[in-house]
Each structure stands twice: as structure tokens, then as C-alpha cells.
Image 1 (cartoon, rainbow, N blue to C red):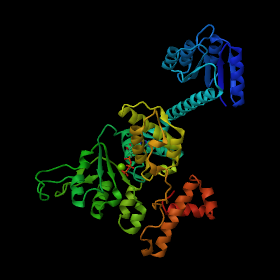
Image 2 (image 1 turned 90 degrees about the vertical axis):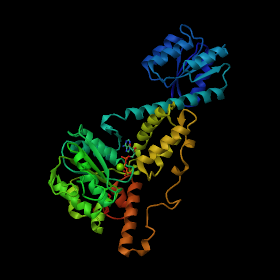
Image 3 (image 1 turned 90 degrees about the horizontal axis):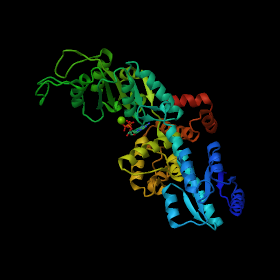
Image 4 (image 1 turned 135 degrees about the horizontal axis):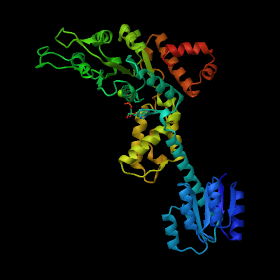
Length: 456
Ligand SMILES: Nc1ncnc2c1ncn2[C@@H]1O[C@H](COP(=O)(O)OP(=O)(O)OP(=O)(O)O)[C@@H](O)[C@H]1O
Ligand SMILES: [Mg+2]
């Protein structure tokens, strides 16, 4: 139901429109002239104005201008008993949603009203999203209003003040790197350097000299002394990404630096003290890697001081509209396109997608959509088809690994159990009580299993 102001001096039109609107479940209100219409617009919330071009006191175009001065997005349709093409053009130029010539046909009126109300609703929704981007719901460039994210931001703010080592875990594309940068920027060393190293990308020997530096002659090709990234990060933060796949030899050295805050360049035994805050990230399960013997337990405990877990996007779907809107604005600006927002049906697709590539995937989808969009809103046609395909339909459902039949039965069952728990938790929006009930286990059993599988 919409509140619709009818500003038309003609009794027959008033009567027709009143009846028509009431029959469609709207809430119409009458104004005899421009001044009365303006009073109503000032005092009340009106969803839509239907105004005759020739109003006593103030003509329809003037009323349109005044209405937009009060509410920039006021939905407004002009009606004209004796309208010309020039009037219609002027009306559209002034920002009217539509211009209808009398005699009015019921069908034409209905269509114009629905269209104007739809557009107004879309504008309002997009504004709400923009308003939601206030400071509580962001941490530097990270946005998120989901409860899990606001809790994460709060912890991140708290640890930013200290020098403690931080371990960030989460799937690929969830925002780990962005979070590491935010913590650095918010910390007292925020003005110092932020040095990023991808530990998974380099072989052990190179990684060592990259991080700790080397002296001349330390190895073939070491033609002069070189400081490493740790020294470069002095007074600031070093961010060690993909720590889960680093080699055992490297892990020993890293442990030493973390413990003693002292390093040695490759080929040199002189200790160099460093004042560096260390943030690490991984998208693999370190506890599992410790069990499997590929990650040192002592290093694990050393870095597991503060663990910030960034949840996958599918576990915080309420953030999808906010993120999508933000990316829309950014890419629209970059591509110099005017886009008002995302159509409701397109937004629904985004909200329901699985997002295996998390925020990075959403970002890419929005960039593509902005480029493809032909109208002034993003529609389902601008979104890739794979978003609407359910997982499982194309065999990527997390479940048994393809070599499950070669694993010890217990291990295979555990993999399956973890996948089932994950799915049940998602299905119940993370509600543990409901999840436990639907699985037919009690809550403490569920908690125990979640902790064991790193799901809590
Ligand atoms: N909460 C967020 N708000 C805004 N942008 C985000 C958010 N999370 C992630 N992004 C954006 O999504 C992309 C991926 O984020 P980021 O690189 O931090 O993920 P990651 O977890 O470090 O991924 P990987 O594991 O592949 O290193 C980046 O372009 C980042 O700007
Ligand atoms: Mg990263």
C-alpha cells in the first residue's frame, strides 16, 4: 500500500483516481490546489504525487520542483488535460517519472504508478544500504554489518593497539589481506612500513634470503649484502601470507625471529635486532597440518596467540548487498557509468549464491555486471549464469574427496562428517541449537565436533 497524493482540481478526475487507487489497495489523499499539495508534502510522507499540469495557484511543474526540493527522490507523475509535447518534454526534464495525457486509461495509470513506485523503492533500498556503511560497520576498507564481522572488527581494533602476533585464517578471497592492512593502519605503527610476503610462492632457499637478507658470497649470485623484508619492515608490520605451506626449515627460522626478535642474514652469524609486528595468514587448517606433521607444533602455538577468523561469504549473506553496492559504486565510477543500483531480482540471486571464491568473486561479478549493464540498474541478465546453479549440480559439492576410498575409513568418515556439519550449520544460518536438533545430537556433542573440525 502506498500513500498517493492527488493534486487535481477536476472533480471527475479526483473521483476516478480515488476509486481506482482504493481498489488497488492504496491510500490516496486529495489536494485542490498547489498550495494545499505542498502543505501535505511538507507535513506527511507521500510515496507518490499525481498532479495536474494546470493547478490553481501553482502549476504542476512548479509543484514538481518544490516537491523535489523537499525530497530529492519524490516520485511524481504529471497529468495533463491540455498538454503539449513541449510540456511532456519539460516534465521529463524536470525529473517527473511520467507524463499522462487525459482522458486517462485505467491501465495506463496503473502501469505508470507501479513503475514510479518500483523505482522509488529501489532508490530507497540503495540509500538504506549506503547509510548502513557507517563506521561501526567498517574497518578501514573492510565493510560488513554481519554480527560475525562486527565482532571480528571489534577484536581487530583491540589487537591493533598491541604488538602481539596475529594469525588470520579464512578461505581464499574472504579479506584476510585487507584485514591485515587494516590492523596495521590502526596500530601505533600505522605510519611505519607494511611489508607483505607470500610465503607459499617461493622455494625455501629464496624465501629465507628474501625475508632475512644475505651477505655477499652467501650463495652463488649473492654479489653484495642485502637486507631482507624483516629489516625493511622495521618499525612497522610484516605480513606473512600463506604460511601454511611453508617449508620445515623456514618454520624453524621464523620461530626463532618470533621468539627472540632477532635475525641473522643468510651467510652471516651476527644477530640483527628487529622491531617488527608480525601478522600471518593462511587458508589451510593449521591444526590439521600440525596433526599431519607438516607444520611445527611449537610454531603453531607461538603464532596462535590471537586468531582472527574471517568467515566465508556464504556464512554472512547479509553482507552481500552492502558489499555489492560498494563494488557497484566503485566500478561505476571507474567506468564512468551512471548506475542507480541493483534490481531486486538480481540482488536476490547475489544473496543466494554460494560464493566459493568469496568476496573476491563477488567483486569480479560486480565489475563484469557494471560493464555489461545496459540500463541504469544491474539486472539478472548482467550476472553470470553460474551464480544460479546449485552446488552439487556440477559436482563441486564439498563432500568426499575423490580419493576417499584410499583413506583409512575413520579419516574418510571424518571428512564426510565435517562436510555434513558445515552444511547443516549453513542451512540453519549458524544456529547451533537448530543444527544439533536437526542432526539428532546434543549441543555439547555438536560444539565438540565443531571445535575439532575447526568450525567454531
Ligand atoms: N569486507 C570487505 N569489504 C570490502 N572489500 C573486501 C572485503 N573483503 C574482501 N574484499 C575485497 O575482496 C578481494 C579479496 O580480498 P583479500 O585479498 O583481502 O582476500 P584474501 O583472504 O587475502 O584472499 P587470498 O586467500 O586469496 O589471499 C580484495 O579485492 C578486497 O579488496
Ligand atoms: Mg591474501
